[in-house]
Image (cartoon, rainbow, N blue to C red; front, top):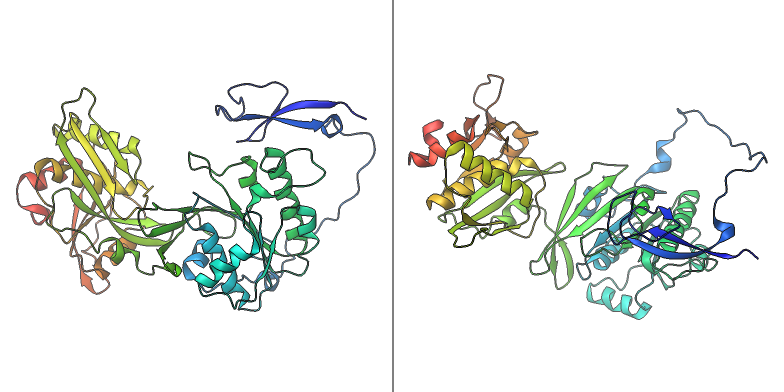
Amino acid sequence: MAKAKKNYICNQCGSVTQKWAGKCESCNEWNCIEEDLTSAQCVPKGMSTAKGRKIELAPLGEFEPTNYKRAISGISEFDRTCGGGLVPGSATLIGGEPGIGKSTLLLQTVCALSKKNQRCVYISGEEAMDQVRMRAARLGLADSPVELASATNVRDILSSVDGADILIIDSIQTMYIDNIDSAPGTVTQVRTSAQEIIRHAKAKNMSVIFVGHVTKDGQIAGPRVLEHMVDTVLHFEGDRSHQFRILRSVKNRFGATDEIGVFEMAGEGLREVLNPSEIFLSQRNQNAAGSAVLAALEGSRPMLVEVQALVAPSTLASPRRSVLGWDPNRLAMIVAVLETRTGLQISGCDIFLNIAGGIRINEPAADLAVAAALISALQNNPLPPETVFFGEIGLAGEVRQIAQGDLRLKEAAKLGFREAIIPKSKNKKPPRKVAANEIRISEIDHIQMLSDMFASNQGVKAYA
């Protein structure tokens, strides 16, 4: 019998080392290396001289689209994020903080799919079957033809789900393979369990959805290779103090990345938000200084959100910078550009920035709206209430163009906005008419022009 040998595995990238270290040399992460006891026979020693089995090669053009008809749940926000539905044989990983609503979302989705002639199996490794039934009864889904089981042994699960169209694994960190001498949730168990389930799902043309836990940094727990093995990675985001939840696609082999679905948490479960712009702006105070409306683009969806800024005098040696829903490093850059290129004295003040509604914005098109909110808060001068902003700001103070400007303007016109401050276009075009409503366009090419608009007390009409 081979002598047991100690290996150390990084739980972020999955690299194997013979000695423990505080920092992984492969991914440069700290405190991520764990001990893993494996047999010496499991350590790869290279290929032998024996020949391998010859595999069958097929031409590229042989493809039948009818075999990959997507399974559409009817929950449009979920289907949009997945790229139009679940592809047969695909593997999807959804992660989120505890209590954010992952199990509720998947239970609603699998119940909707089961009513469309899809055989759905829900495997819970964390809850008993009666607990899942209680949630289904609370959501009004107790009559759905979903097959339910509480199990954690991968061998038993794969022997019981043949013929299923949709398989839910809640969660992958609770699964284990009985011939591996390590506890569930370890790097080896998570990686091997996912690999076996994905291999079985692709062989049987079955869609599988994994639920994944997250670390304190918001990353999906377990080996980083898990995200590479699956076809789609979804993050379920949101502040539990707000009722809104965002389902964001960060990887999708069958659709667009950065696509989002917006949900509202209610007593009967998650409800779709078909017009998130109207919801996010419903409680906006139009006469408050430091409030600007951003025309953002998340995936293929335009969305208007409120950017709130508060600038207050500081007595601290290092003024505070508090940011919710945006990149703090980008705020520091915008503050430096405003002070250097416009002469505004803002770096010595406490700055608080918030994207209202609990949503997170990642695109650089928010720079111009953030700058407008900061200038308005510093001068205590409210912005025109029917004005939207979008544009990227460079280190020289220039305002750069961004993608899909017309799509953002259409969304603004639909909600009644009449003015827009946007980057200056290089092509000379006539004034744009969007959705049969004329929006006054103010094009600027430098951040100084934005500062002068409010200093002149004439607003955007001076530059129209």
